[in-house]
Image (cartoon, rainbow, N blue to C red; front, side, top):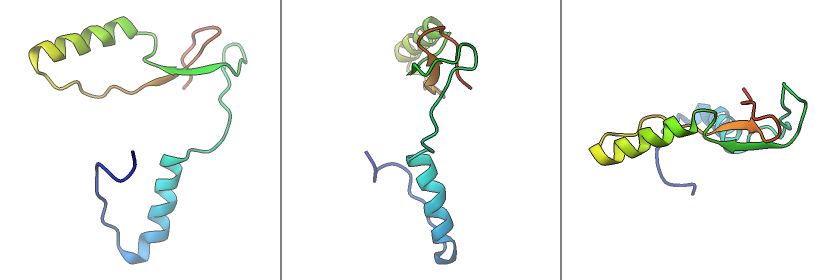
Amino acid sequence: MLGSGIQVFVNKNNLDKAVELLQDKIEPNNSELICQNCGSKNIGLGLGKRKAFILFNIFVALLSAIPLGNLKPKYYCKDCKTEIK
């Protein structure tokens, strides 16, 4: 949902550049992801190879009221399970 979260103040002189930078984050380049290992275009988004470890950390964080930290989803090949960088 856009419009909630962080507010950014930008000088009027830099407004065009700021909008351009934000557009790249909101609508990334439409370049198609391809697996470097097998050449497949069957790419998914998930927790990565260490899924069990990440889920365990989430469980422990919830039980002990510790902040989760930086959990970024990663692109991976659905055919050969290689993480896309």
